Length: 504
Image (cartoon, rainbow, N blue to C red; front, side):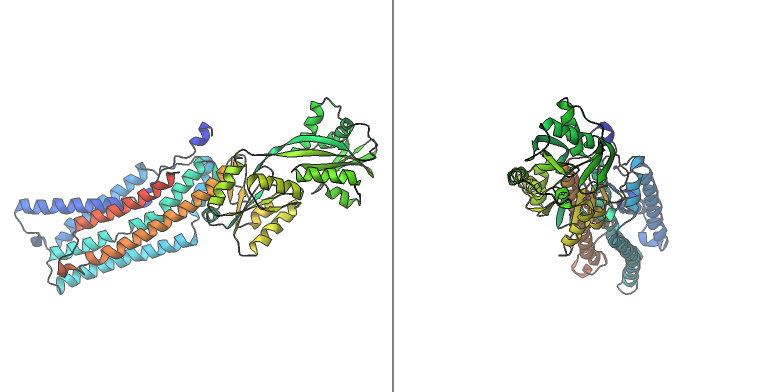
């Protein structure tokens, strides 16, 4: 990872949006202690202040607390600062999931409910329970402080923003936050083979003349094939052209080059049509192989090699054999996903033997071979029919339809950091381990968010009745200072728990 990418984000774990609330809680305790000290020094009773106690107590807290909030928002910026080039991720952050929006509404109503409850218990305590004005106001503040929902406010946004920062730091981008959030919960990961688990580069294995071929040497076969493939930018085409150059073979000039979708490529050489492609071109032209050639091709196929046939008009000249280069980190990525109990599938347009061979190297049992680009979305849809949620990992060109069909579309080896229209998540690197990290990060973020919510709600359920004076008859109560301390501690726990995302 270069220096520029490392500074795109500095992951941390602090969200200043509601950071002033813990400050209010802490300041409340300080103002409370200072106020009582001042009253004692003046030799007066706090009850002599009457309702002025509200202004002595509340206004400094609220005004100073809001000042702290503004200062924090300006100075204590969220530490995962994203560069302007990742502005689309900031925009995606604003498009919050429906659950988070509902939670915000609940918390807003909770704030009003807490204020009403605090007022009710303090008034009833004063009017019915015989509390002094000071004790009633203290009860009001205790309820208000201990139930301050800053922990709930921090529970989800802090985890989400920190996960975003960590993702961006590692070159994982998203334009659809919902898809990133859902990534950790998918049932199955479906990899397109070429360019993800295997490198885009192919290695040339060998050339073979068919029985009865009119050619005199394999070099002539390579030259004819290279004449067509030199016009293409596919990894297989590049490997064939490079092999011809490496052997110092003169590449003939082929005209009228054209791609045959899902089959291969073709061109015209000396008024004859040359076609180079996979086994499907034999079927489409009703051509058959000599038994000996069929056995050899089958052996190559089972060895995991791609077989390309070369046809001149109606003559089958021979075939070329190319191999895959499995990425060094692909096995580790597969093992990491299997540890997370994810089903893994391999999708490719190559022959079944190639898919099986690569799958065996990586420990992938489910393989889908000889699938044309436009058929990949159908495979995804078929897998979804058993209620499975699918994450499709592939390139944003050939696999665009499949990426859109999947529950989570992950565009692999994307240049730059711009959002990809066909996928909600994009990975800049060509290292499959990075995808595994993205999935694990999404899963951990969801777990941390759930923990924060449960802890925050549990804290409120336990402490609110105590602050309201339910157990005052048995000597259990909370002063504003203690309530402020507990509230601050709960907020700190939520933040610390979110920061643990950085581990591992």
